[in-house]
Image (cartoon, rainbow, N blue to C red; front, side, top):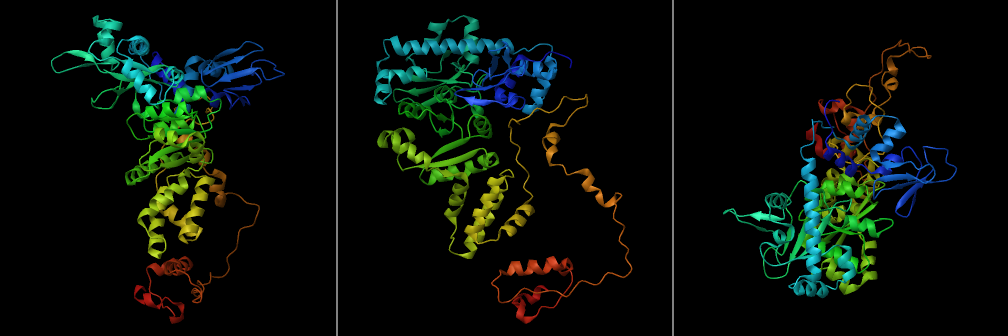
Length: 539
């Protein structure tokens, strides 16, 4: 492969691919606390001395001293060179490996990380010692937050004024340029540069590795907007960043579930009440990238929605994004809040135990789907149940084939009074294209033999039928061929459905067509007792 692999792409691989997923396909691992342990693959290990840390994306053997990260493990275990290891991991993540003479953005990204970190420290220091910090401190105390929680989430204070960051970090040309690229300053139409965040409580937004990449600010006066986030930068992309995910991973030894709320203040307030597994989107609805990231961190996601009409409408829209991620191993639940409450106010009003009880009773996505779609139909009527089926089947078709989807169909069959076989047939007729989910597979494909591999085709390799079975009708067989001596008899006389059984009209028609498909194009006679005489005109 000609050219140099950009450092930014290697960082992307480390963010996208979980080291535990890679190593566990080669070495049996068992979770213990925050880490995973097993027998070392690099020496004759009699006891589990091999440790893997998903938080740090590293492994270490306390027996032989072998250690490293994601790429070095592939190189050592698979006995491949650096480029081949990168190519294997890129294929695993569904990415193409870019090459260039040098990564022109590597230095810029490093400088941005540094300037954002310096700004983070300046905001934290201001919350502790700035003369005007009283309003910020009083606001946090009024929300019931302690100094311990403020420190854990790195809360800070952006004083009023226009040049706080310039005064703290410098106003030379290079620093000004970096502050602007990091989204920390703004240039108006007259070319004047000033701080983006002023008189706000500051919430640092961290990536999964704990690096500060952006900020959210809550205003302390009547300024608008009340909440302000950093703009999109080379470090920060709100569509795949979740506030509080790093903190949740640090607080919970086993992240069994994650609660998704609307704002970062909800996340911090819930943590104050011992609910350490909350995260928040940053001015966007929950995206596929968010869910992809969460599905690699936990087995269950609970999403909060307002209980009013607007909240239910938002939940309906969110279903289309969530359905492709549902599986036997990953579940999504819906928590509808009482009117007038957000997670912060609800946990203060009810307390920790009552709030946790609500989480335990949250609706599984399968039930939420039926309930939300049932809002506009009357299930006591036949046409209402038919309408529900028509609305639900295209949604269920987006769920990957699994036992979970099968159980969803069972539930719909029972509720609508439709036979499961009819639902399966209708589902096949929908021809819903499978939704592409950017997720990390559990195994790395074998080393390329030099030919290009279509990643999308490779991902469906296991679905290919046995080629021998495809052509078995044309292969040699130990059975003698069938000798046809007489002409094949004509199709038997049509068997009409029993008129005494309350079968739906459409099922009766389907029964006839399955016996003889030519009925779709040729006329036929219908006995009066068949209970189909009312559609005689169709023949």
